Image (cartoon, rainbow, N blue to C red; front, top):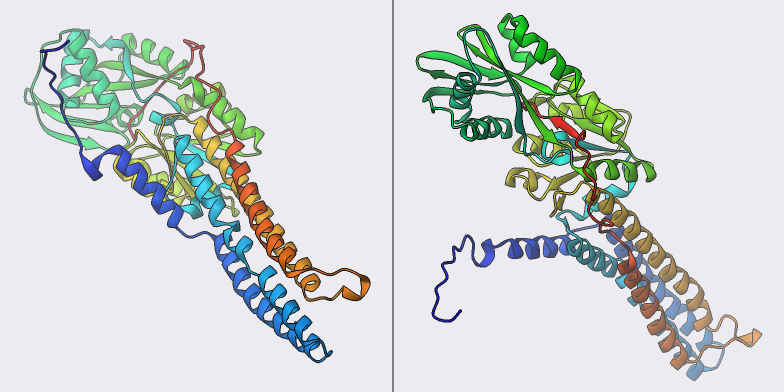
Length: 458
């Protein structure tokens, strides 16, 4: 309505906006090198010398045959028809179109070589939390130990986790707020990578973590808590324990919904002949449960953040070409180690910086799209190279008059048209790449409530 007011908060301007960032990535990808482009450049350089040599041979042959005018016409025809226009456009056109097509479908190519390597992948490795799952865990159960209650347990756990940025920590804090639990103050917080976190709360050392931390602390689990944790573990859920000065206060279970698109992505990767693996800090029980639900072939469980890159190297054993898909700071070394690093667009800046391909949407099916784009682009490049090379192999002898005595002659005007036609064919073939369907067929409508998993510190 007129006369009203509108308050707008500007979070980025100019080159800091997401659109500018996308434009920079696309421009950099189109300008970046390509092995196939290097091959085409070498072929074009060779063709230049072949054209000059063919022109010289043609001129010499017809000149000394006595027909000097015909010699000049033949030589000009050879030089016209041998112009490497088609060869020069064979690869750059495909690169420009594939990069543009990828951007239109939410695939930002930072490194052309990464996209080229994607066509030969043997395996795709997914980080679990935030990639195969929604990355929005929630507390779904609380088991208080003797001498405490659920609210007291949550209050101590939330006090520790209020200082952490981990999704699980946020889930515990959110649950405490939802229950309107009294807030406790914590000091000297310390993150324990792959295990949990600890802090001083009311003068006591409170530790929150998973089974690994419990084993290290050698804390005894009371029967009334054990019955719950055993049931949760049997369901493939991750249990977090709260320990105060060596005594167990209780346990929490945190669940994270599997993305409904994950199973479809795994199925489509299998159809492309690619195996699928998962790296997670979860216990093997939880990891195997997730793997069974969505059809994952191999699992690396209980992997600490610092061990992710090493886990990728193990998957690369035997010369396997692998891609790593992740979204967190802890995934950055693994993304850089993999043959192809793919970052989820909703992930951290560090992960995106380490990847060669960035998925704008947090949809694992876009990994399939990236591989299809890689394979289709390579096919178009090879088709264009074959056409441009074959055209010159056939056209140069004809233009030089090699078959004149057999009644096959090529006028200069026809040679000019043939040269232009070969360029048009290469350009048209590259444009056919736009027919490739990369975007997933649509969101998965059904969400099975059993498709719930848990997340563990990593």
